[in-house]
Image (cartoon, rainbow, N blue to C red; front, side, top):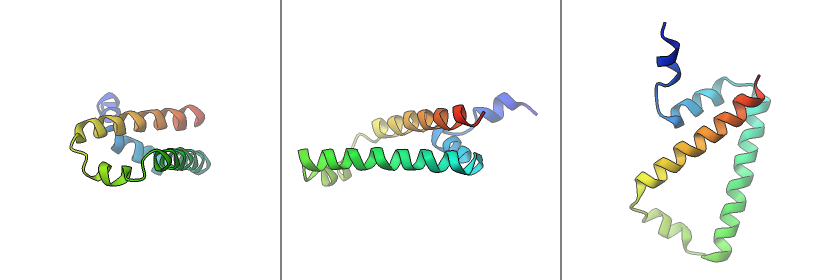
Length: 86
């Protein structure tokens, strides 16, 4: 079995979900709470700056930038989980 091929197969988001489903429950819980806290802070900040940000986000046409950022965040999150899982 080629482990290198298996490790790099799929998108960062798919790999992130796989790690979430298989890592230590406490580590995953901590990571999800961390991400939820960050999301809450970001949304509160955006609400105070521009109450219509969510409608403009839905109209966003630059989905490639969003996908790129999602991949980057997935990789960061995987790193946090895996570095604590050793």
